Amino acid sequence: MKTAPEYFSVESIGAADLGFISVAEFPSNIPFEVKRVYWTYYTPNNVQRGGHAHYDLEQLIFAVSGKITFITEDRQGNKETFILEEPNKGLFIPKMVWRDIQFSHNAVLLCLASLEYDEADYIREYDIFKQHCK
Ligand code: TYD
Image 1 (cartoon, rainbow, N blue to C red):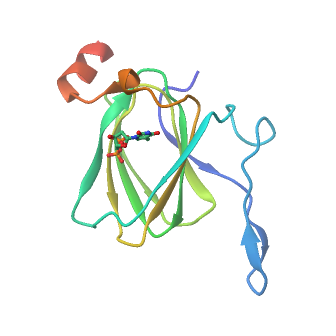
Image 2 (image 1 turned 135 degrees about the vertical axis):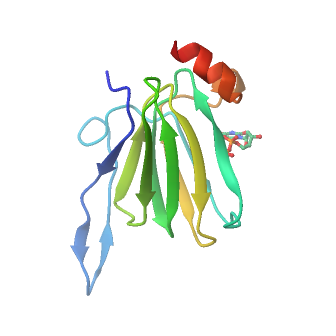
């Protein structure tokens, strides 16, 4: 089981003169069945979002437009920065990863999620996240 986030690219099908399509399909090219899809947009670029981890949720995230920067910390305490700015280059986030997120104003974040929305799955206090990592 993966415990660290990692880039997750899907194929970019097409050509510059025609345009492109990318596909996420379980099980052929993504690692979990998608229960929920959400997208965020118009986030001002001076705002930091995220600020949480999840007990069980796995996510595949794409910047279908714009640039999105993730600063992550996994349960081993490894901190990393991931930059998404190509529509076919995503980020796989396993369970128990703290993330802070910054957006360019034109960014559209698309999230494929392994579970339905459940506020009880969120850890919104960094200290509590660190306690669970021990
Ligand atoms: P949150 O996940 O905290 O967003 P971010 O990490 O981008 O800051 O969600 C923001 C709000 O949206 C929060 O009040 C919960 C709500 N929400 C839902 O109702 N359903 C969902 O599937 C998601 C992702 C969020």
